[in-house]
Length: 117
Length: 116
Image 1 (cartoon, rainbow over the protein chains, first blue to last red):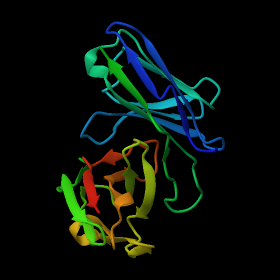
Image 2: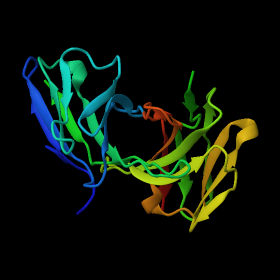
Image 3: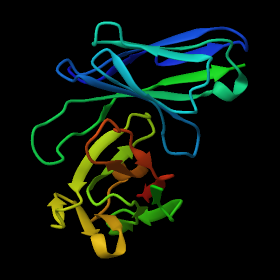
């Protein structure tokens, strides 16, 4: 399977605990994105990497959230001191710059569903 | 400001009916991309189509067709002869062109139920 993969698929944790999610992008893609989606809403952008550089962070990403992509391949998203409001689906996407007119497309993984009790 | 509006929250049709999902967008950019994604109950977002702002040709792919009208800032999606497997939430999204800003701006989605 050469698509975007995310682990774990589901995570249940108690408030105050730390959690870490992993995303493995499509192998030739150098851009990686994290989004958060709550029930009945569209995804909300969290952050974006080009290779190992984090180029943009949303204001939604509080200081309890940190994302890394140390070798420009897989990425991790960590949430410290989780709160019930962090319960959501966390989606990862990857893309590759394409020479030409507007051909870049983000491909999504299956998501990690987080429930904070 | 950039915004995507999908005014239809839920649509229910009977199998074999045609259905159109509306998408209206706002942007000050002169060049941009528009997308449709499908999110079935499993949760994974599946890419359906990308359209560039300077390409107003409509597109057909099997039972799916898209009508892009820059004059009305709309990018509507029609499913012909709907099937139960089309049941999903469909999202329209907008992305700027160029620079380092790559985030997608999403609508709230339209939940489509196709009943047998």
